[in-house]
Image (cartoon, rainbow, N blue to C red; front, side, top):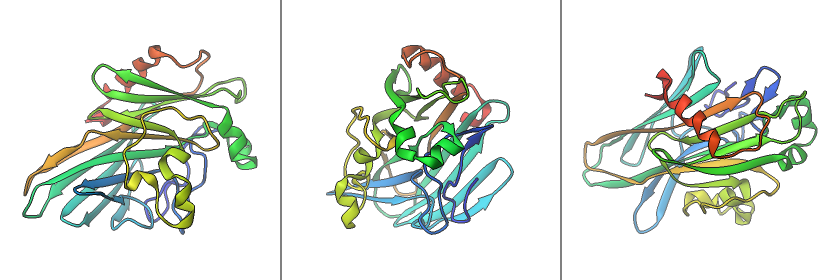
Length: 256
């Protein structure tokens, strides 16, 4: 479910809710993709939600967001796989300015992967049971496998999230993405700093994946994106064996 401003309200697979907090029309939700511009400092903008400049279009299995930020035109597409529990974010960028721009993308996704009733009763309790395991894929860099250790009707669901062009860093908790100073209005850390590339199991389950910076010359176009894979039941603890889900996701037609 998406809101009119493109923010994610709910992601469900049967009786399991993947996201941790419901997105609203006013505030949007924690899930977002940030476009970052590198210069003397980092500037950034969210590509969906109430703070985005995008115009939103929604179809049966997809959503698009088109907009402009400074000299960068962007098109964001959210696609649901046809036959497998996977989703893809595709981001097309065009530099319409007169100078080169160095940019990267960061995908942020809050995770509960639990029963809706349990999530809404106490998000932080559910969050404590999500185990995040960073894994290094030989072609796609850093991905994060997240397993719900609290039984959901006898199941332990799992997600694997990564970058289509390759992840160079990651975070596993909202404290790493937002920081404490965000409460005083300074904005999330992800807008001005690199992701830490370390695992933190704190109070707010959140996966963030950062792709590699790229230089766009005047008129240049580039396409990047992110993927997510869902397993309804993953009885074993997360391990490098879970990299097989990366390959399964990338084999789907929605990955390109």
